[in-house]
Each structure stands twice: as structure tokens, then as C-alpha cells.
Length: 309
Image (cartoon, rainbow, N blue to C red):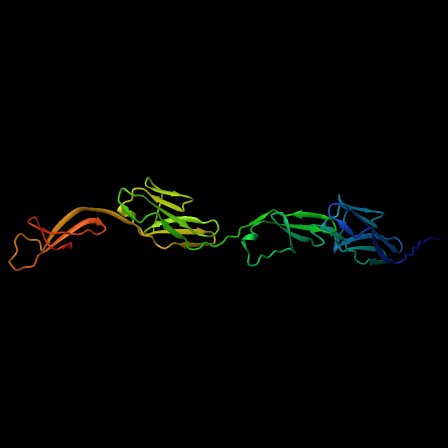
């Protein structure tokens, strides 16, 4: 009885080499084809991206018995390293690594340019530092990133930088300071240097608000009081602010002339009869501004005393 045995001799795998048609790609635009060649017989091909097996998908094609890998519209995640692993029943071998350079947002690193109000500045780099900033540097800043590989650029939205000059202590000028109650009006004007000042008036530390008699004009820098009363004597102060500073004026007092009125005479001690030789004080009180001159009378005759008591 006779039989036959088939003996197959395999050549070990060796010389595994990967050849890419390109290694510089623009993201979402370019494709790449990697071809794997080797010596040996009955070979099987497997592709690795880093240490993960590459499988076919909409963008990934495996052809020529898996010896060719094509990636369509490469992304930044397709940079590798790629390796080709070849095996047969008696041996296996792996190629060296292939790295792809895929230009993304932004790879390679972008070049940065800076603009102020649309004008290009000399500064470059991803960070712009404004040291000892001045008012002339106020405006709309934007940066532009440029990729030398893709020749594409992208410009950021603008950011506003507002540089303000600090306000100096304000000065108040008054149209007149001697005023007759219910008759005269007065105008107080507040001036200060600095950027974007806001004005606030205080009367004896209480905020002054507009009313029928009180007018705030010229951006609240001018205070007009019509038909002044004795309660409008102050002290008045002008408070000036901007987002970076504030200041107060010196206090201003007004002299409002009124009275005399509501005069009242009292005795101390108050009693019906007094012993001869005792002391008695007569006190005269009155509402008046300025302090009035007092004259005393006894039975209608003018005395020499001129004080309120």
C-alpha cells in the first residue's frame, strides 16, 4: 500500500518596508497611500496605527491583499506612527514606523500677527503683553493665525481694550455765595480732568437729586438751585468717578440770608415775682441768617444792651 505526502516549504518573512506616496498632508483635503513590501511566502498583512489595528472604514481602504493602506481626507488623528506587520505560518516581521505630518489648526505651529483697530502691529507670537499701557493703546485688538503649510489664516474676534486717564480732584465754582432766601438762585459748576468722568453732588453728605427747584445739567456737572432756602447752605461737594479712579472737591458753603422770624422771649428763672436784688436773665431767640443784631427795650425805651440775652 502506498501514499503521498505534500510538503510545503515556506520562506520566512523579511525586509518589511513601508513606502508612503507623501508624508505632508493638509487636514480634510489630502489623501495618502502606504504600500507594504517584504520578502517571504504566503504572507498576511496587518496595519497598525500606534499599537491599534487599522480596519477598513469610509475613509480607510485596505487593498492588494491588505498590503496597501489608503487614507482619504486625512485628519490630525491619522499621523501615526504607522507600521506594517507581515506574517506567515513560520515567521513574522514588522516594518519601521512611518509618521505623517498633517497640517491642522494649527499644525505645524501657526504664526501669530496682532492688529489694533485693523492696523498690523510689529508684535508676533501667541501672547501680546501691553506694559505701562497708555490711552493711545485703546481700541479693538485681534490676532491672526497663519499656517505656512496650508497657506490658510484665521482671524479672531475683536477684544476691546479701554485705557482711561485717572480723574483729578474736581474744582467747584459758584456763581454767587450770598443769597436771599426764596428770591435768589445759585449755580455750582464742577470741573475735573480725566477720562469719562461721572458727577455726583452731595449736600452735607447726602446725594442731591433733581426736583422742581434743583436742576442737574451738563452731564450732572452743573447744579442749579432755584429760590434757595436756608436748607441749601451746604456744605456742597462734587464727587467725580470713572471706572479706574475717583475724587472729591473741597466743600463749598453758601450763605443764605433769611429772617428774622419766629422771635421768642423767655425769662430765667421763670416766675411771677422777683426779690429786689435777685438776678434775672431775659433770653431772646429768633430764626435768622446771618445772626441778627439784638436791641432791648424797657417800657418802650431802647436800652444799651445789644446781645441776645
